[in-house]
Image (cartoon, rainbow, N blue to C red; front, side, top):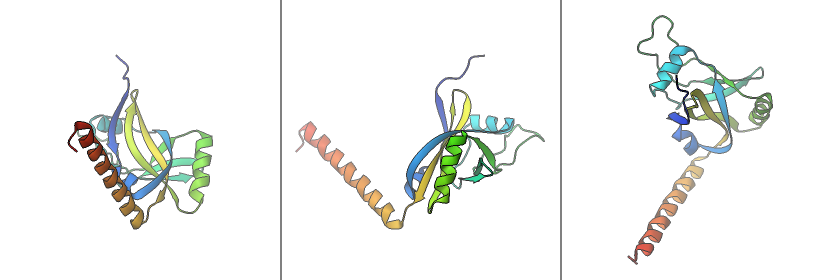
Length: 158
């Protein structure tokens, strides 16, 4: 059997990038059961309400929805169970130190397959205030208008 190459994105959490200032990102493996992997390979998952927690030196992923596998039988998994993340001890210690600081949380950004293995990208993040969100939207709009104007000038449309 041929080994998979490259990355295949299963789910992304776009709302996390809108609601949080992303500080540091980490790539973590996940401990999954067989039906979860099959359901992920079908491209079904949701990271919307997901968050991570450090407990007894282990990082756990909570509230990530991986639906039950349609052809699964009694061995099927619970769709919102907590899943253990696989990280180095140094990374876990860094994450734990930062989470204990005021305002930091760990959120999942994307779920993907990398060379056939399920991975999750998690980020240390600090919550944005509503005025931060408005500033981000205004900056994005201004950059978009700049790019449109530059494109018009390059085309000679004044």
